[in-house]
Image 1: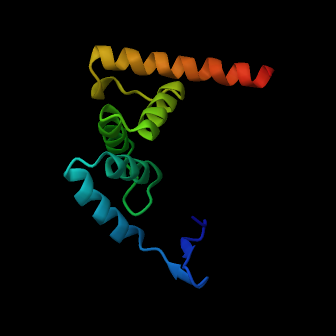
Image 2 (image 1 turned 135 degrees about the horizontal axis):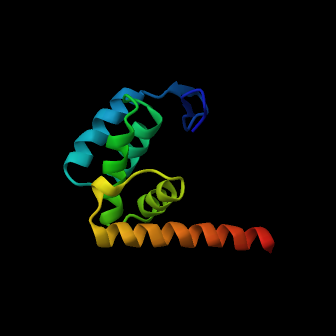
Length: 116
């Protein structure tokens, strides 16, 4: 996606993206339990794209998607832990511990890659 909110159409003309409409559709799908919609909507709330910025709502939605096994959401949730986000309210003790371990693993993996 381009930073100017335009996406090339198949015939190479630019058409404007309707972020608010996209968010409305994601909300409907997320309410039905669609993990990808929950993740994408969570990211939209985190960035304030098409919806008001709301970190708490973003964390809840990304957590819902992650607990359904969506890898991108799991990675993002681990990154949020690594960056110091407070997620205690959204996960029980065992789940929280596993995300903390994942974030520590990711930090170690990044350090190893820097050495290679």
